[in-house]
Length: 296
Ligand code: PMP
Image 1 (spheres, helix red, strand yellow):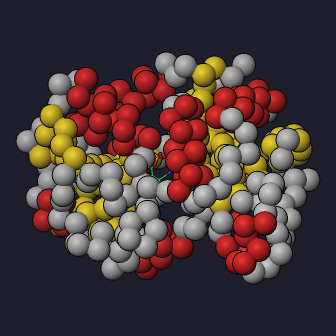
Image 2 (cartoon, rainbow, N blue to C red):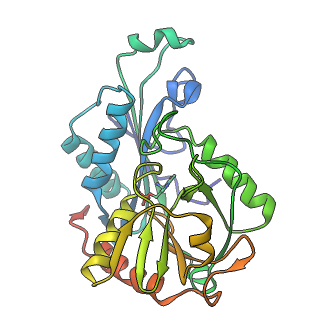
């Protein structure tokens, strides 16, 4: 289905072929989206920002009042072991923890004892698509607003992506490449699975990490840009700031850095990918190549 070879997945302490790996239909991930996860990048046998991803997974579990199934060091070990067993040179890993298996009904949730832990590997020979990088993406601002912290904190990377998927459907309906969500106050939040940056007069601006998922790539780009001498501010942005930007780009583990050349039919800058996005992509790739965790 994925065109991927039959890789080896991790399921509750066992390594199994992806095609054989099973999850109970009574798992709370399937019943309630009662699970949290991380998407990790593997580049040249190295797992990028592994500690940061594991930390975020632990924060997500704490928010959701889930009992960690192992120590953070144990999670790092099984991620590296999965990469090694698959001899995965370049790819993606999904590390997922669900509350576990239990009877139907929310009232039984507190009785669930054993979390489900999964690692699903995927081969990706290429990361961000070079062609899209050279041409840039078109975007709309969606009517779907990002789930506010008052409802469920968007900093939690949970397995309920319906809010994000609704934005994605609007994007597809509009025939563009990205859908940008606002928060409930009308300020720019993030795309369905990417964070957003604006460049104005060589100054990088990005929403504060309160109404968005605080992306690991986002945090890395902020650090790399500052190290490069750029001024970076975490601030409120409205659609106006997107329309008037010199550059807009998205960041995520999978897509790395994607320049946006049009928002709501208004050209961004010169309607071509800008120099800051390209520079940050090179910096990010250098950083990935130097990632500490070499799996094999
Ligand atoms: N926002 C959302 C909603 C996401 O799903 C993702 C992808 N994990 C991101 C932002 C980017 O986060 P990261 O850089 O950690 O991949």
